[in-house]
Image 1 (cartoon, helix red, strand yellow):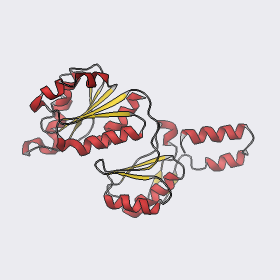
Image 2 (cartoon, helix red, strand yellow):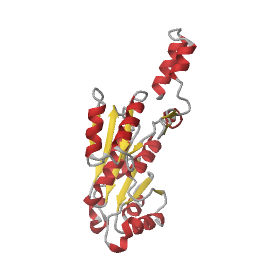
Image 3 (cartoon, one colour):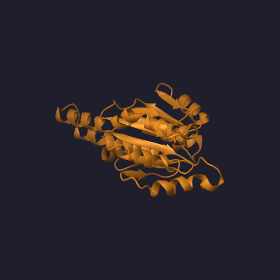
Image 4 (cartoon, helix red, strand yellow):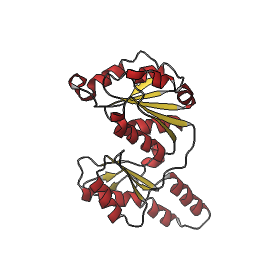
Amino acid sequence: MDRERVEALLRDLKAGKLTVGQAMQALRDLPYEDLGFAKLDSHRDLRRGFPEVILCLGKTPERIVEISKRMSESHGLVLATRASPEVARRLREALNGKKVTYHEEASIVSIGTAKRPSGGSVLVVTAGTSDLPVAEEAAVTAELMGCRVKRLFDVGVAGVHRILDQRDLLEDAKVIIVVAGMEGALPSVVAGLVDSPVIAVPTSIGYGASFDGLAALLGMLNSCAPGVAVVNIDNGFGAGYLASLLNR
């Protein structure tokens, strides 16, 4: 149940187009819908401004389809993250008639229409091209949540002149997401150049002593530049979600 539907429901009730019983029936799933194997938080959009998001990891395709079907009945937009091409295919078949889009590089399936863009721009920056899947997860999440998103890729500290050459783009952004692996130094560089909040995303990209992103995570947590918030390793979704809240 998203905000627009609740507002329309209350207007219809006030205008006498609905009875109290009909309105109660429409709101019957408060506070959640129990599917047996999952309990859907059907009113999260009312509290948080965006519906519950489906994490596909660890779920069977059948359960992902069932959750998606039920959520799409009451929400104008449903997101499924870390979705494989097979999951995307199954969702297209099962939700025939609905707009199902697979954002392949981001591994996200969206069901429905993205929110209309509003607010300032969110800039997604990567240190290297190996960081693109995580960066695209962040960018697509922010776009679907109603942000104007710009991308700036492959500008890591190994060639710092590349990021210094993009000062206008950096300064124009309301929120900046910086995605980096290896030693994770890029968020500190960016945060030292701008007055907007920087969300740092460590990735698991790197050689042995990077410890699957732990070195980048610790480096970002120890940033000497103020105004840097750090999400978990490879958590592009979390970064895109937080950016949309800040942009809102």
